[in-house]
Image 1 (tube, rainbow, N blue to C red):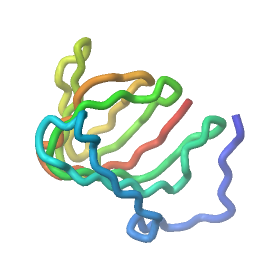
Image 2 (cartoon, one colour; image 1 turned 180 degrees about the horizontal axis):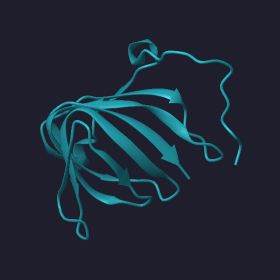
Image 3 (cartoon, rainbow, N blue to C red; image 1 turned 45 degrees about the vertical axis):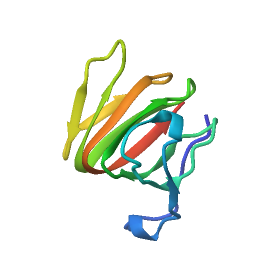
Image 4 (cartoon, rainbow, N blue to C red; image 1 turned 180 degrees about the vertical axis):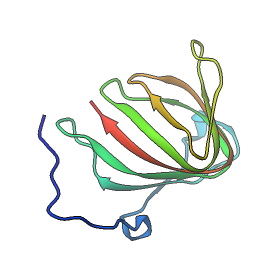
Length: 122
């Protein structure tokens, strides 16, 4: 795996990163039509990790996580939960750190607008 390197110490302002906005596909929606925004610091590629910030409005949707990607995250604001047929509903709030394993298939439910930092690993 290619090593990530940075040339200097720097302060990161997430609002200055490229913003990618999306909405869950209609067939995946459960409640609401939550806007989601990602701001990658390092775009994910199969040979290296990805790092960035993610936020979402209140709502719920089904999703399937790619089989080649694990996510470690830390919640900066808000509350959301993850659940699947094999995973009981697990809630995450400000200050919590968690993992979404490769291939996870389930429901993400945002109950209070959420913002998190994530690291994507293969």
